Structures are given as C-alpha cells and as structure tokens.
Length: 434
Ligand code: DLL
Image (spheres, helix red, strand yellow):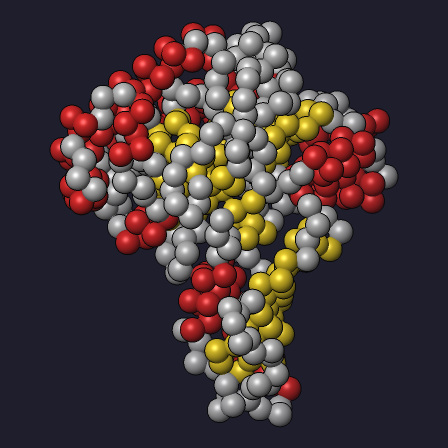
C-alpha cells in the first residue's frame, strides 16, 4: 500500500509550493487575459494586467468571480478552449432556472482524477479495496468523480449510484465492499434500511471506511455513524465549479488536505473581501491553477471554513482546510441536491395560480431530508372544490420536480393565510439538526 500518491506534490516544502503556485497563476492569468473576453474585461476594470502578477502574493489584486457570473455566461461563454477540446459536461443547480454547466478537457479530468487518487491513498484505499460509489452518477460530479479516482488507485469499483438501498446493501455484502463513498445522510439511511432487513453492517459486511461529503455534517454525526456502523468516516470536499469531489482528510482526520498545486484557497472576510489569517474562519475563494476549460480565479465559493495552522502528522505539507461550517448564502443541500430558494421562487413565479407568499420547510424524517412548500394561491384561482385544488397542487409538485430534480410536498394555502413580514422575509425554515 502506497503511503502517498504523489509525494513530490503532497510533501513539497511550503516555500517551493508558493513559487509553483505563483508560476501557475501567472500562466493562467496570461492565458485568460488573452483568450477570454470575460476575464479580460474584468481584469481591465480592476486595473490589473498579467504582468502585475509576479508571485502568489499578487493574487489579491485579481478581481473575484461569482456564481452569478456563471449564470450570466450560461452555458459555455466562460469556456476558454474550443468545443473540440471539451470531453465532458457536468452541471449543478444555479440560483435561478438554469443550472451551472461545467466543461472538462482531458487535462481537467486528469488533475481531478489525480486529486482523488491522492485523497483515496491518504485514506488508505488502494488495490485491495472494493469501493462502492453511492454518490449519484450523471450530471452530479460525485459518482463519476469518485469512480475514476478509485479506478486510478486500482480499487475495484461498484458503481451503484444512489437509490435502491436494499439492493445496494446486498451488493455490499456479496462483493465484500470495504469502503463506501456517499453522503453522510445516505450512510445513515443505509444503516436504518440494513437494520430493517435484519442486517448489521458491522457484523455482516466487510465495510470499514466511508468517504462522506457533498453536504454539511458534523463531528457528532461522524460519531453517530461510526458507533452505529463500525466504519471509520472521512470528510471529502469539492464543488462542481472546482471539478467535483477532490480533497479529503487523511488517516489522521485533522483537516482536509488541499492539493496546493491544483487549487489555491483564500479565506476572506465575507463583507470586505479582505484575506484573513490562517486559523480564522471566513468565506472561501478558490483559484484553480490547472483548470483548462472553465478557469476559476478567486471564485467566491460561499462555503465557510478556515485554513488550519501547522502541519499534519501524516507528513503532507499541503494546506489543510477545516470542516465546512456553513455558507454565506442561502443554498440548501437536500438529499445531496443543491437548492437555492431563488430557484423555487423562479419556478413559482411562472405558475399563474400561485400568489406571492410561500414558505419552505426542510426537515429530517429518520435519516432522509424532506422539503415542504406552503404556497398561497391567488384569489382568482382559489376554489372550494377539492379536485381543483388537488390538480393545482399536483401541477406545482411536478413543475418543482422538473426544476429542482427533487420531490417537494406542496401544501396550498388560501390567500392571506401565510404570515407577512415587516422586515426581511423569512421564507426558509430548516429544522434539520446536524
Ligand atoms: O457536492 C461535489 C462533491 C461530491 C463533494 C461528492 C463531495 C463528495 P456541488 O453539487 O457543486 O458539488 O456542491 C458543492 O456542497 O459548496 C458545499 O456547500 C457542499 N459540500 C460539499 N462537500 C462538503 C463537505 C459537490 N464535505 C457544495 N462538507 C459545496 C460540507 C460540503 N459541505
């Protein structure tokens, strides 16, 4: 079993890494300035030229990028390579009706897979392991990302994707799965279903490790999962704009190791955009140093975390990220699917029967997340006939399913029935306890 996948990069002295990052950043910025109208204009507006970027310390002179920029340039105007070089697309929820589309060149798939090979090796997953990938395959990056990373380290992959939990558990048992990759809530759900089937994951399977991410979770959830299933659980992080899942904790489980040659992380004061010191919590901005198709420079991820001080006992010198403790925007993650309240509003606004007032409640029933939407009906559309109301409700439910790719239970309300707000409207109640 290898200790490090890429010791040269993972254990590079800090000074050398900064130099490498500086060179990569300079190259990236030169390319963007010359070949992409968006970046060119942004840099000019900020009064910065590629020649101003001499080292990584100059990064703070570069303008930020936001998710809204991706939306405005939907679907591919941010791409900096010809279409012939794109070999894959993924997509994630946008803040309104359209998703964010991410394109990948062969080179992008390469650094993504490399990042995952490093992460899996650091967790101790290798050719003796059978890895069940229970993240969704498809437009979501979790399934295919873990899949190729696991193949790269020589693990045997069970590409079971999400759903059909009983069958997944049978496969886990029959194929001697040692490691699972899924969301923490799906891990808990699997355990509940296993119990229902008379199966004890600890006793009846070879599962010993779980690579969990794609949604917020906490140390108490980790303890709960470990105590109830006997696995050792590791945190893995990434976003589709970065490529997908990429960086994880190592066996020490003392922070998420970020491949500094691949991604530069800054922690910012969300209000001022000023860079904060290591150890302070703030909003992440990431610069993808190797990304080709759709570069990200100082992209405001909206996740809240800190960069950890000191070095990890595992010997890797790479920067370490704390757990993600929250977000600076209102994005919800429900069953691993990102949902912006603005998307719901956008979908509702297009339905003539629906009024202006709505309320979203998210709860956890057992281990699964549920979303309920209460929506006021316009007086013109309101009817005493139950069948009319049922028809409207089903239509709203199916429209929301189409927009969000998520089942939402809808409750119709009479005009004036929902609370009004004098100040800022509070339209989301999240009752989940992490
Ligand atoms: O969730 C990629 C991923 C797949 C990560 C599988 C890990 C495992 P998106 O759908 O773009 O990509 O969602 C990204 O999910 O900005 C965070 O808010 C949240 N998130 C991801 N990992 C974690 C984590 C994938 N370990 C958004 N802890 C991010 C907390 C996480 N939040």
